[in-house]
Length: 266
Image (cartoon, rainbow, N blue to C red):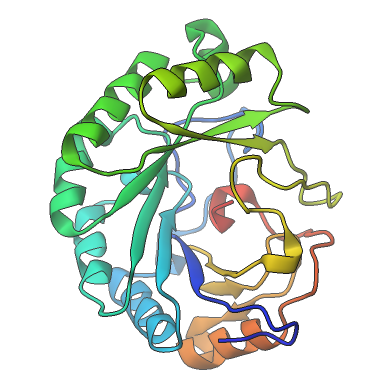
């Protein structure tokens, strides 16, 4: 699929839930968020249908996101369903890593190729402060579980304030270098003010080469993270929603007043 700016759209991020076992300060307020009612969350069959149509239109890369995707009940079954689609070259998942000791091997056996794991600091106290609930040692265990299961390459998503030279970011980079992990630095963004930057170590945030669509957990196809444009797969059908999103994908991001990182999937 080509959009009107001649960008090849071949990547879909699929948010399967807005729930999470953490409360990261840059993602949600301490008291949490107003959750999407369960009846509004797409079923696995609905997600599979959207993925199937997307793949038939040229999508060959899918990333499963959340919230935290591993809190979604029977998530391994969904991975198996999506992995069965002919044409997918890259099936990944973004996770905080805490549940990987339980699920990594099951996910690999179901057909998941690789994982991105969030890790902003190695310091246990700072990690707990940033996530409000987490234990960084659980993330380390998750990384090892992903390695053992062969979910490679493992990419580490490290959120920074301004620069990768910040002490915590440098410590994460050193840790990655010693443990055969790829690190990506993601400057903290704000949907409502339109503040976003290119991902250091990746290609996210560079509008002129953006190749992605996003499926929210409640069934909206969004052509841009920093835009309020969205197309409802339940009302329009998967094919029409996808084609409208591609046809109306903006040249660059601006702001989003109705999007949230917790259910758009970042």
